[in-house]
Length: 423
Image (cartoon, rainbow, N blue to C red):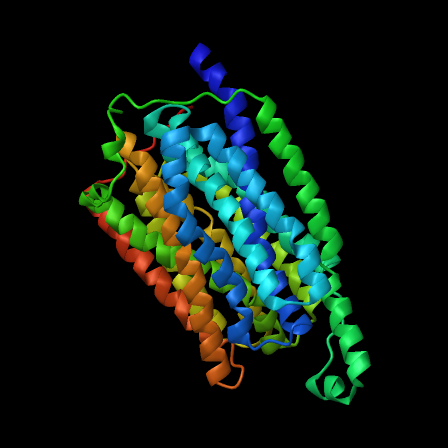
């Protein structure tokens, strides 16, 4: 009981970090159409917003794991928050310069900070309690990630999107000065929101600095040699890394082009689409996290993962081949069934790895780079088909098929632990 009480405050504080990287990921569906307007981008070019974020994860994940391995959990959190705060501040000069490249650099730095936070928080949460309920505990903590997931598009839609949607003909008819003024106005819409985000991040940084966060040592921790590529001898980790690559790619792809998709299938205004994505799709994502944690008391995690992957394939096929509201609402239902996927794949991947959990966590976070590539492929398909973003959603459907294969392999081989009913 005493040990559990010692873990309560760290659990609460570390769980609060899940909101920050959720906000980063789920503000992208707002930034993509917004900067597409402000910087006059193609669908493929606008997808580089996702690429900057997820390439940040890919390049920084191993250094973050090394840092955590040598200096511990708390210093990893502090350094991650510092990078996150610096990146958000850089949005202000990027907007003033109306430089797309500057925006991408700022996003890369924010993502680097989020990588430290995520590399620390995911494995740390699994260690704060009974090993048999690690998946359940991580899903519960990730439920608060869902809060950031639904708030980000709502806040972004309200404070970043202007609601002004000029046609190409209207833009062409503007004088050079009027066009420049309009584009500068659009770019400047991000300044105040990102100043507020930076202030919040630095307050959280100060809170962690003055709070005691205990280190948790593994019973088998021996030396630095455990931090190596040899961790891939574990087949379930290899499968999890591949599955996580395709999961994050599908998650990012589904959300990033939703505003474009809803405009294409039913001519929905951008502010309305942003609100619906946050208030329906991302609320579903958050609710799915909580209900998924409950379902895992009775259904094996890998089996539930299989079921949800199947449902998402069906929903995406409906969204691709249906029209109007049917297509849009089928796509809005997808996040509910995505909700358990990242933490469940993650927990299955690091199961029973002991001290190798730290390096395994780094590789799993590196696999988030899938989010850099899937939106690019979708954007390219849209550009090559005259802007048919609906057809591009075949790509995340294929990604969910890969996840289904991983889930079935874990379920049939019994590599996941039955989650105990704690009633």
